[in-house]
Structures are given as C-alpha cells and as structure tokens.
Length: 121
Figure 1: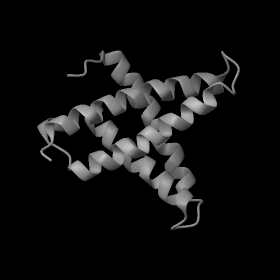
Figure 2 (figure 1 turned 135 degrees about the horizontal axis):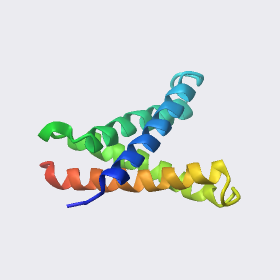
Figure 3 (figure 1 turned 90 degrees about the vertical axis):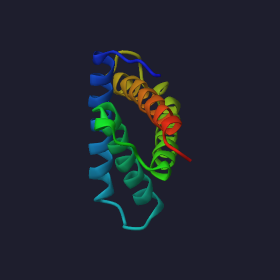
Figure 4 (figure 1 turned 30 degrees about the vertical axis):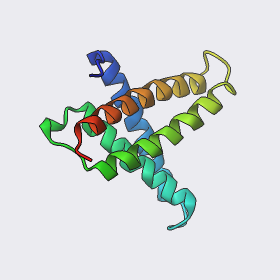
C-alpha cells in the first residue's frame, strides 16, 4: 500500500489541480476533435481521477478502463514534464513548477496503480 504523508498528498493535490485547470483552460481554446484537444481533455479527466483518489474516494472504486486511461494520460504528462524540467534554470519558478508537477504525477500514478490492484479485471 502506498503511504504518503498528509503534506505530500496536499502538495500533490495542489499541483494536480493546477495541471488540471491549465489543461481545461487550454482545451477550451483548441479545435474540438483535434489530437491536442483530446490530449488536454484526457489530462483533465485523469487529474480528476487522481484528485478523487487523493481525497479518499469514500471506499468506492473506479472502473478499470477509467484507471487505465488515467494511467496512460498521466504517464505521458510525467514523461513530458521530465523532458522539459532540465530546460529551466534551477531555482526559477518554471523549474520549481515542473519539479512539483513531477512529484505530484508520481504520487498520482502510485495511487492509480494501487487502485488498479484493488479493481477486479
């Protein structure tokens, strides 16, 4: 079972909410049906799933397909964040944002993987 401190979960929640809101705003400006629109919408849905898990999900479970889609979208977001973090100077706000996002995405993925283990196939 993944164990995270209240502080880690709180910080992950804040970073995921920021990622979610940024993608939701961007999705509204993209051509509907484009790959960019689908990608940003997938991140919004996946961040919602991760936030639901962070908030404790009240003992309910999520559908296996939703978990798989969330895992795929957040894995891609993590890959992109890890690729770009080195482009920013250490100590800048952009670098800190990416480091926080990477940590949050790793927590989200761990929670999703844990939930996948509890969800019947």
